[in-house]
Structure formats: C-alpha cells, structure tokens
Amino acid sequence: MGFFDKFKKKKDAAPAEKAEGCCCAQKAAAPAAAPAGSNVFPAADLGEVFPGAPKNGKIKLAIYWAAACGGCDVSLLDTNERILTIGEFADIVMWPIATDGKEKDIEAMDDGSITVPLISGAVRNSENEHMVKLLRKKSAIVVAYGSCAMFGGSPALANLVPGGADEILDYVYRKVPSTAAFQEKYHADCAVVPKSTIQVPEGTLTLPVVYDTVKTLDQIIDVDYYLPGCPPQQESITHLLKAVVDFVYNDVALPPKGTEIGVTDKCLCDECPRTKEYARITKIYEPYQVNVDPNKCLMDQGILCLGPATVGGCNAKCTKAGQPCRGCYGPTKLVQEHGASALTAIASLFPVLDEDPTCDEQKIIEIMSTVKDPLGYFYAYTVGKSLIKRTVTEEKA
Ligand code: SF4
Ligand code: SF4
Ligand code: SF4
Image 1: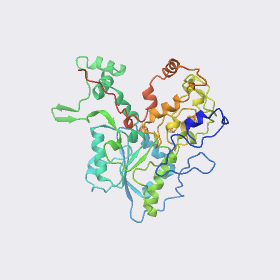
Image 2 (image 1 turned 45 degrees about the vertical axis):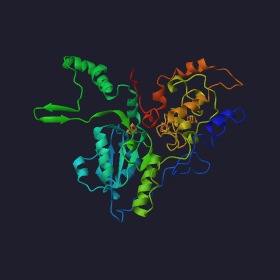
Image 3 (image 1 turned 120 degrees about the horizontal axis):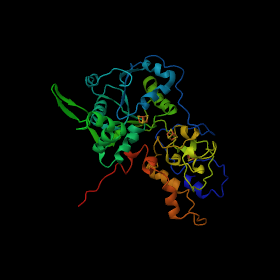
Image 4 (image 1 turned 180 degrees about the vertical axis):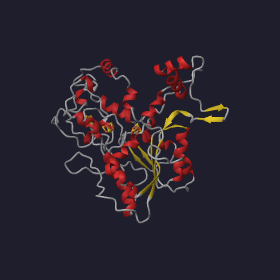
C-alpha cells in the first residue's frame, strides 16, 4: 500500500499502522532484504578477517574527490578496523586526502589497470573533469561514491545562481563581509578575483576553470556502480566492500552495471520506526520550534520530511535522531523527480479533502510560504539530476 493510499484510508486504519510499502517503493537492482519482522537494513557480513592476499594478486584501488567536502573520504573510516586491513587485498594508488599520489603517477599507468576508483564529489571545474576522465580511462570499473557524485549534491545548488560562476566568484570575493573588508583594505583600486590564467614574469600560471553548471559524475563519464549518501552510511559501505571482497576472494560476479549498492527496494519511511498517523498539515515547523515527539512521524508533527520519496538504506539515521530526512540517499527507483515527489507527498497531507474543506488555496499558499528556501529544501541533494538542472535567464527580445 502506498503513502497516498494510506493517507486516503487513514480514517479506517488503525492509527499505529506500520508501513508495508510506499508509493515510491520499487525493485532496486540488488537490494539486501531486512530480516523478517524487522525494518532495519542490515550491514553486510564481512567475516572475521580478510584471508591474506588474493590468489590473483591485490587489486588497485583509487579514491578521488572532485567537488567534495571530504566527508565521503572520512566515511571510509566507518569501515572501523577494516580500514587497517584493506591493504590485504588492495594497493591504494591514489587518495589525495591521505596519501601523496601524483597525477603523473596515474597518467603513467596502463589504461584499465586500476581495478576501481571510488570517486566522490560533483564535477565543478576543469580539473575535476580532467581527473575523472583520466581515472575512467585508467580504470576497469568506476564507482560514484556519495550524493555529490551521484546527484550533484550540495555543490549543484550553485546551479540555481542565475549568473553562474561569474556571479558566484563576484559574490564570494567581493561581497561576502570578510572578503569585502579584505578587498577594501588591500585592493581598494582593483579587487582581486581568481582568474583561470595569469601572466607572471616566470611564465603563465593557471587555475581550474570554474563551470557555470555543476554536473554529476555520470554526466561526464560512464559510471558502473553507485553508492548514495551524504556521506554513505556504514551499512551501505559494507555492501560495497562485500561485493569487492566476494569478487576478489571468491570469484563471485560483480552486481549488474548500474546497481545502486547499499539501498533497499523501499522508501525510507519503511525503515523509520516512527509511528505514522498521516495527520493533516496545517502549519509547518522547524524541529527547533517544537518539542519533537520521539515516537511520532515528523510529518504528523508538521515537520517536512523527504522520507516518502527517498530510498531506504541508511536505517533512518536522521529521523531516529529527531531530524527530518533531507533526501541524501536520493529518490527511489519509481521517483523521477525527487523534490517534486516529496512535495507531492506533503501536498497530500493538506486538509483539502472534499468532505473536510478546512483549507483553501490561499491558506495552503500561506502555509507553504513559511518554507524559506523551497528549492533548497526539496532538492538539497538532487538538483544536478533534476529536470530543473539549473536556473536560466531568458533573453529579452
Ligand atoms: S556527498 Fe556529502 S559527504 Fe560526500 S562529498 Fe558530498 S557533501 Fe561531502
Ligand atoms: S518521519 Fe519521515 S521517514 Fe519517518 S515515517 Fe515520517 S515521513 Fe517517513
Ligand atoms: S535520513 Fe535521509 S538525509 Fe538522513 S542519512 Fe538517511 S537518507 Fe540521508
């Protein structure tokens, strides 16, 4: 039964009815099933220890960040003590945040000789594009690691700035109070804003070109596997590691190309332990504005949650902590447009049913107007993959 169906039938249903599915539920390529009677997405069992070097030799692993915050790199530490034993089966040939690998070392490698790079971050500038294309050429399989690589993530929110890179650089280097004060003090005659090339007595210096539109990894290169999350959660990471370990040690075939690893076949609401009553929304709250009931669905408390449109796999980390899901795992397979789908789920909770018309259009506009940044709220992670993609300015005739 779907989210909307349940809402329509809520008058007949027991208030504490537990979700069995969702309008957004779909069959993911290789989901892991929760144990019967449980709504917890289990971590993969990696066994006690890795059994030494694989018989075919170690794989070559690269870890690269494009337009990323570093959180995805840090999330690899969620493998706990496993991080110390990855060297049993893999040589790390590149990991900018942790090792001293150089681009020229990668260029010198044979094409296809890196087994797998985990690439986090969106493609934001010319260096990102060059590096992901280089890694694609040198690698057998490529994993888009984290929400920024998969959907554009928070970097892609920059696509909503109408003036693109120029407007962003102008704002950051001239108008932000700290930089404005700096420019006023030291460069009052001519503000210094980074350029992609500059001549100096020693020659030409270059910086990466910042693009107007931030792109997802698979908008630039062919991607084999996806691991969503901001960052991916431990449960999901174990499924990626298990696929690699099974392949390396046990000759188990890798999942089908295109698989989203570490996600369930249902939406987040199905693994959220909060009790849903499908109450109608008459006022929207931020979590800090109310005493959040630890057991009730956040939507029932007027807090907007993207759970109905978001794929499961994180074990409802945020909602268990009293915060709404912002959708970092991205949409379920049945959802084409993540933010719009979440908005639709929320719209179904307004009290506009014919038999109980307590809310007219003007009232709904008033309620929704209290959401200060609707695009940023409903597309916090997925602008890069959305139909919207970016703000455009119409040319005046
Ligand atoms: S997905 Fe999240 S944690 Fe990973 S790089 Fe992007 S912002 Fe950082
Ligand atoms: S709190 Fe969010 S994820 Fe949990 S049941 Fe409610 S809408 Fe779904
Ligand atoms: S609850 Fe939502 S925002 Fe939080 S980790 Fe899970 S998918 Fe991401």
